Amino acid sequence: PEGTVSAVRPSPEADATTRVLLSGVPGVGADHTLAVFVDPYTAKVRGALEQYGSGGALPLRTWIDEFHRNLHLGENGRLYSELAASWLWVIAGGGLVLWFGRRRAQRTVRGTSGRRRTLGLHGTVGVWAAAGFIFLSATGLTWSTYAGANIDELRTSLGQATPSVSASTGGAEHAGHSGAGTGEATAQDLDTILSAARAKGLGDPVEIVAPADAHSAYVVKQIQRSWPEKQDSVAVDPATGKVTDELRFADYPLLAKLTRWGIDAHTGVLFGLVNQIALMALALSLILLIVWGYRLWWQRGRDSAFGRPIPRGAWQQVPPQILVPAMAAVAVLGYFVPLLGIPLAVFIAVDVLLGEFGHRKEKRTQRARGGQAA
Image (tube, rainbow, N blue to C red; front, top):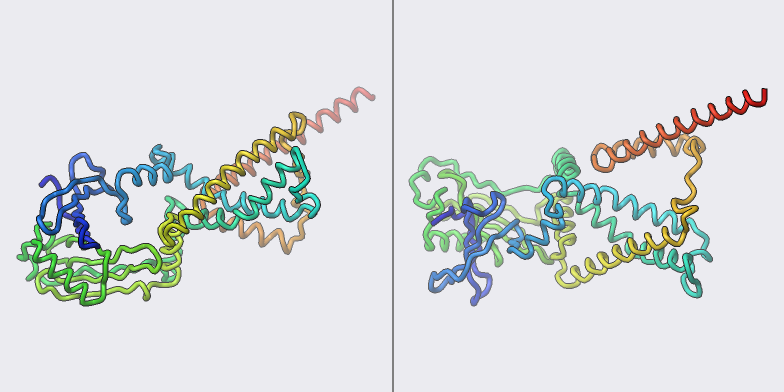
């Protein structure tokens, strides 16, 4: 009684409970719901757990999911996560360029030792894992704070936004229906709504979303994220039990489909266990690359710990027909991916200042030497 029914997930198996989702429950976050597990045969409550997201994540998975999203540091942590996703593909791409730019003999791992062997291991694993890192970066950015908003805006402008079924009934006569917008629909009401959805071909698992107001319909949507995905949805008028609108996943725009598939593969649900094993291998690869990277830095020695810097002014040697398009592409990327563009701009500004200070110091030194010679 302490919340409002926002949705119901009927039991997908004969021996499973029905999940009733309550919003506005004291002590439960605004973006979370309380999932109450009810025996569909006896109507007895078997338990209640906090739930997050459309994937139905319960407390343990929610904790892991939020740790991945923001390290449990709120907005600052989420910005850090987006910063990492914004640069991961750049670092992976840079590693590929460095690796394939080396002579074949220098890429050999067998029969080597010391720093050369570490470099070989780092490069070999990095080459195999690079495609996965780029994929994780691209799919992670689609639901990030700033880059994600820009991507959504771009998709909308191209007519590739994710569509949604219309829940409007448009009739004032629905205002008196007891279940509309009140969360008070009876089990019989829900059975009627579910039967109408079944008649349109919506198989398990599904979620029945309560109307937002007295003039809205119930929305029944498939929630299977594994392959093949089931994402069809229909709107059902609570007064008449008739379907007022329907949307098929097959009719989604291409970019909307790719976004859905990409996010589900990113979270390990699209291809089930195979998907999860692949993500675990990627995570292990990333850990090994970080360890080997620090080991390479240590093996390089103190005197040259940071390597040889690129000579200043080297960019002036790049042909204009390559330099100008490349700079334009970087500017566009920096605009759509702010946590790539802003740090890059800061880095360039600092580098220019350091170069200017070094240039002035060198001129003062030359003048001092000239004065001494005179």
